[in-house]
Image (cartoon, rainbow, N blue to C red; front, side):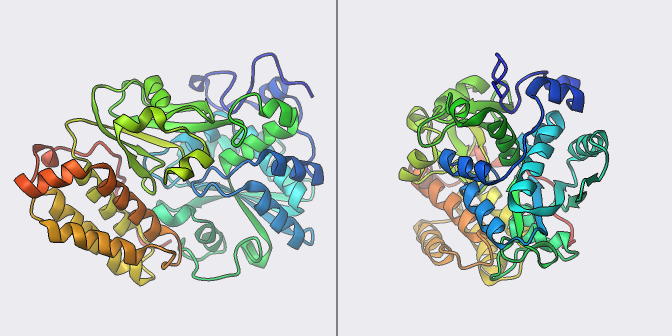
Length: 424
């Protein structure tokens, strides 16, 4: 099928103000959804689409692993939990283009041999859940032939979107990551091979299946073709979700969002991401391979501009404190290590620490990293802390020399939801 004259992409077409795109308009704009199968899996491998939930794992590897183990009763879990406080992109996508997400889920189910699709959507994303419910009804209800579709409300916890936590919750347990194999592709929902895939990834597959790899490569880079959704927020005049091509620079993304003034730093990738100095923004290219070479990552596509009057050390301490409270509290690195890190980071940011605190943070960071927890929660927190110490040495020296700067008393420029409830 030939693509329409105007590139459709993820958010192409009618603006968000009109709400969810009806099924008839969706089909009229993009055409019917083709079937999945081995050809689609080969295309996924040739294109190299990576998961958009944060880990950036190659999608085709997950699909192939589930397909190889499926006896025709596998499960597809479309992950729209979006527990990252600074990200809105999954919410916007599910609200605007619910049928594109459902198309991707159907294609995945065809390809891996699944009889069930689970839509796993964050509790606070009420508008997204309503849009998906309406879209399911427009497609004939919760039975797609022999396939069953159901929507599960994810709890408001940061780790609830981790794939083993999602499977555990769907099966009636707490939304906590599991400690050891089997992984979901081996034994997931109700013991069946399960493909856990972010909703943006599924929506991209729905476009790729329609228009093919040549069209998909019309934007992006050779190593990372196609578009991506980024959430730009913080001290910008035009906060929002933007669809941009891979290969765009961080500076270009910020120019689109229009910084409100000079910046102290930029948070890239979310609360498991890293700090980037304004001086590096133009040279940081949003391409997985290029970012990996410089020790950075796209994560879930978050870009937060921190104004010059803010304190990046205090913002880092606040994130560490949030991550400590949001951990599953089922292993030592999270239960004891993260609160300790947050406490020392607060002391340093508030001017109560000395050189010993800096050395302590560096030593503990080294001890906590390397997959010592049940999931990547400690590793993500440590990566953020290490990036702050590397990116802002002048702030560290200032706090050691003169104590707290005035900015530590100001409100945070980062979003922090209320503390998570229990473990359901």
